[in-house]
Length: 162
Image (cartoon, one colour):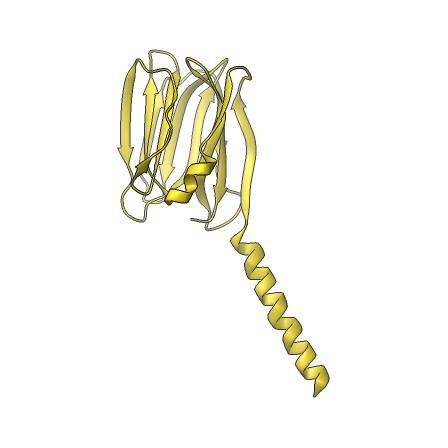
């Protein structure tokens, strides 16, 4: 009987440990683009909830600024303050599930794909291609990091559970 209790306890502990590990699964493939500029990260803004919107500022050649909305709160804006700014609001329950784009010396193009099949394209289609998506099932874009000055020099995507 004692052995049975020990085995059951081990199975339960193993199950809760596996669930705990599953809830922490995240992935990051690195940054796309060049170095230079000042580092930025939206990691601390996740506390306001999931990504619910984004603003991308572009000029004739590059992505020059980024801002994300978490829950009902717009986070910090990183980048240059001139140029065309475009705003996208996600639908309830919608998440970003893939980001593609092109880079050269800077980030030239960003393409966001959502869980509802919507595609949002910003910038100019020139440079080297990249395609980033989560490594684990049931994970989505949690935050973005990179480097910026008057343009976005590089960008990386951090994936995790909603």
